[in-house]
Image (cartoon, rainbow, N blue to C red; front, side, top):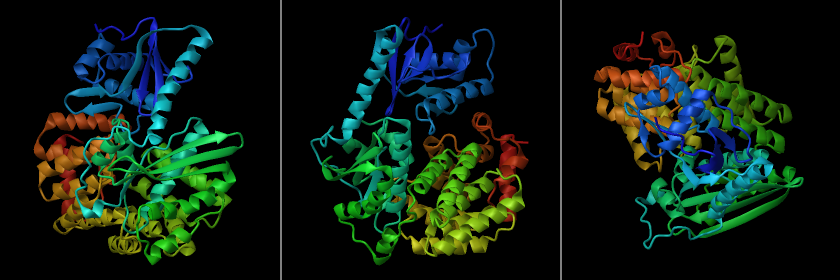
Amino acid sequence: MTQSPVHNGAEQIRLGGTCYIWQDGQLLDADGRTVPLRAKSLRMLEVLLSERGRIVSKDRLSELVWPDVIATDESIARCIADIRKALGDIVHKAVETFPKQGYRLNVEMRGQSIPTPTGRTGLLILAVSCAVILLGINLWFSDTRVGAPDTQIAFPAADLQKSVAILPFTADAEQDRLLAGGLSDDLEIRLSEISGIRIVSQVQTQAMAARLDSLIELSQVLTARYLIGGSVRSKGGDVAVSLQLINGSDGATIWADRFEGPRENLLAYRQKLPEALVKAMHVTLEPRDLQRLAREGTTVPAAFEDVMHARRELSLFTYQGSLAAEKYLRRALERDPDYARAYAELAAAFAIRFENSWVVLSGADTEKALYFAQKALELDAELWLAHYALGRLHSVIPSGDIDVALNHLRTAMSLQPANDDARIYYATLTTMAGRPEAALPQFESVMATHPVPPFWYYIGYSNTLLHLRRYDEAEEAALTCVNQMPNSPYCLRALVALYGRLGRQDDADWTMVEYAALGYELTIAAMMKSALERDPSMYAFLEESYRLAGVE
């Protein structure tokens, strides 16, 4: 049997910008506190650590973690889920799934076989060591020539010259990490509303930033002309925020700025950031861009932070995350009853619930969701997100109208031509209305020009290819979706249907185990509740695909 990687010693585990300590069969955080894990999950983590960087099969995991019995796929999947939760591995990049092969742990180890110091002093030494590692990560932003190659990067197309990737903002304290995430999310939202700029999704950026050491290499992989880095630090009752705009072709800092002062003054600073950044990028602002930038959204700092917290919760794509997001958004509206974006985000959150059958009282939830979207438009008639939310709602609520949905999406596209989200959802609904051949060119146009399409773009694209019977291409799109967001039920449902059509039962079984391990009901009735197909023949085709895969 494989032995523990370290005995009577300790190792530091680096996962992106986070540091853990592995000591005597226990997982500790950077402060030396035990990270709770069940015994079998701890043993599985120990095995994966000893084989890090290599794929470990399910049979091998069963042999090493359950030596006296044969473990079920569900038991293995549950331990994997526990480890991912403990490591904060939302996008499944630390513990990576390889269908029909196994799992691979992707972490860096430092200080291998360190003699373990004892007591609080020993833990302090390990924590300081982790802090030194993280300091090196933070210095990434101050060293403008990290890993610079000898040659310039050639960017592939003129329309990508203004593509931007927002790097994970760094912070130490928990409250600073939440604020850092909120600021980067807000900056992504506001920059995406500016004509002529394309934003690389933060999910993609964070995943690649954890793997690559060079800013220039990261820029090349993401096809991003510019990178934005930032850090947040609390200093007594004040907060310090540092930002940099980095040229992806040579790693040089083009623009830098710093805010230091009371948290309540941060909103005024945040208001001027997009305009300062686009000026540094030499982007020409259209009249509508100037109007959007002039709108403050809210003047209540706490309401702004609540909306940013809500967006983080929604990004988890879980029912609990959805409930937490609703709590934050309602609190934001208590603080500022005229906050249009908070209403629009609430409407979008309810649309996601309907898409995943997370609603309890369908009629009441429908009424609330439509009210939130209409209220957002009453407060800001040109808020594209409100029209986008209405488009999604009318595609999923029982009383929805597909033509109304498409009209709202057209309005969202006219209000925000540079944002591809509405365009992709419009193409998705075009397919579901029974016109996949008309939707395909729309998908191909967006996918060809978007710097790095986010995972959910591939869902609609895969479904369109499925209904066109182009199964191999549909599988490629669905697998790309799963690789980007392994915990997305949408991606896994698409694969189940595809493997049913392809007659690949082993692949279908593996995918269904992953789907069930996320807590979703694996029945025809439950899966068809999430179907967007409005054309009867397409609905029947999807249902038959699930049955061919073995769903009952």
